[in-house]
Image 1: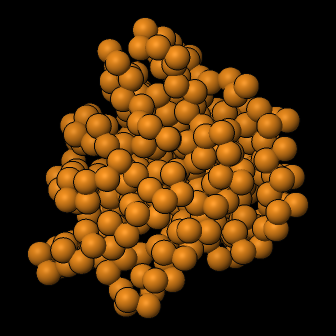
Image 2: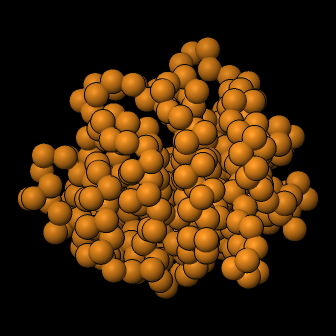
Length: 304
């Protein structure tokens, strides 16, 4: 089957022709490594065996764009190349449906994020992703404004040639595949895509295989973690601490010809605990999930 890989998507080692076997990279995010210096986080992920590292850009994280001068960016870029580690995604927090001033500020943050994307991986810039927030039960009143704001995101993506992604999220305005598909259709831009994270659909009582197959045509990136509870009262967990069937998830991706990244996201529900250890957590998640790639015969990338 032909790959569902999308144009301009971050650090995807897309096959040179349609007959080539797609690769699926396995990464870990620095959202769960706030206490580590960037160089150490990159080194740790490479030594554990991950193919990529997602960098968190929010206020307070070491890779917030405003904190990185050109020398810092060049050093990060060189370390990534030396360790053959991809950076498939940059994680931001740009909630929509608030004030016009906040939307303008979010667009400026988004522009800085896309600049960083090109500075770190000029040959294949990572996607920039964020939740959109809002409330599930305010959909009819807010969906038009959401489309307008995400159209502005897409325009930033077009100008910078960077794919921008929004993530469907339990209890938020976009909480189902149907709403995500509707928004994507309304914006109608190749620069706006979706991040698939089943932990949110699990809370909404939706099927993994069905929701993933629905969204794969517009999915640029896959995040993994577990969850339990309800949309109104829930907890996010490490992958493997809940009921998500990761064998099923990877099997659907493989059979669909997905060529991209699957990335561990450590929720603040986990990394804010007093006894949280980022390196041990990264090692644990790798031990839990990496063997499935080999068992299922999924090729992982080797960054040139």
